[in-house]
Amino acid sequence: MPTTETTALTTALERDYGLPGAVLERLPIGQVTVNYRARFPDRAVLFVKHYPAGADLAAERSAIAQSRLAGEHGVPVATARASLDGQVITEHDGHAISVWEWVEGRTVEDGLNPAQQRAAGRALGTIHRAFVGHPAAASASSKLERWMNPDIQKLEATVDKLLGMVNERAQRDDFDEQALRTLAERRAVLHRIPGLIAGLPELSTQVLHGDYSAVNLLFDGDTLTAVLDFLPPDPFLTAYELGRIAFDPRAVVLHEDWITSGVRLVGAYLETNPDLPAADVRACARVALLQLVTSLYGVKQHYCDPGLLQDDLDQFWLLRHAAAQRLLERLEEVEAALGEAAAQHGR
Image 1 (spheres, rainbow, N blue to C red):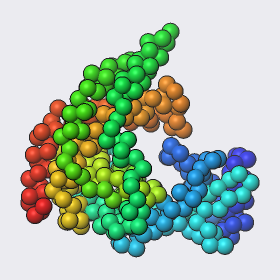
Image 2 (cartoon, helix red, strand yellow; image 1 turned 60 degrees about the horizontal axis):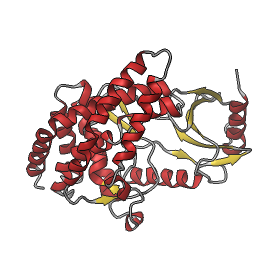
Image 3 (cartoon, rainbow, N blue to C red; image 1 turned 45 degrees about the vertical axis):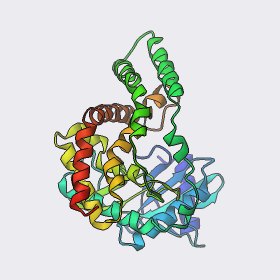
């Protein structure tokens, strides 16, 4: 049954893109945009992204340009279809959409296998090599200073607030019990953050994909068919993006050989971006750990501002917390393995 929203979108597809007769199916993906599969009478299939009210559409357009730039360098990406007047995002009556060619594939939710790890590593290396001279890199990172100097007291206060909210519930469900345990564990390690930061070497920054994670990689078997959802250009730590995918929480928690897996992905990355300094390679797991341990993403939304797909965010919090615990316990071993990988690739 069409809704007011889907009726507006089908009208926009016909008016702005010359695509009549769309049948829209909402997809259970995305925490910011509302996403649809659009089927047409001629059996064509497209992907439609509906932006929320107040979205920064200029930033979204620049993100689409980043995707296009990566595609020009051989990275498999989805292609944004321009409207009849050449726009990659159209706006009418409070509705803003972009339309994309449909790419077959699926996201891997239980950790990448060896072939997929290599494909993901090589693609990220290609992206970083393509973006290394990006004009936006001349500007200072908008978030690096904050990232390098997290407010530990504020983190502790937020954890305490969340613990208080859970404890005040008259009846607690399974997630509440898990939240109590994981938040207490997180609070107990926050004092280690300054030491982890002090152990970082000088690291390089550049324009990145911005959100290179398993949920934004489509695979058809072992073949990477598309890298999705680039962010606007904003320079940040190269090691951050490498460590985030090499030590993806799914791999760290669900696979016993997660250190080998992470190093394998890093090795594949260095095949296409061999100029990354050894210091960045060795530090990428520590940077990934710091990102995890300073984040309350998922559990904070659960109690303060539920997301579009909050059940997914709940599970993501539990996964990321478990990954942070494992990385913290074995960080020295991981960094030694990364140092060996850098040496093997001449870094």
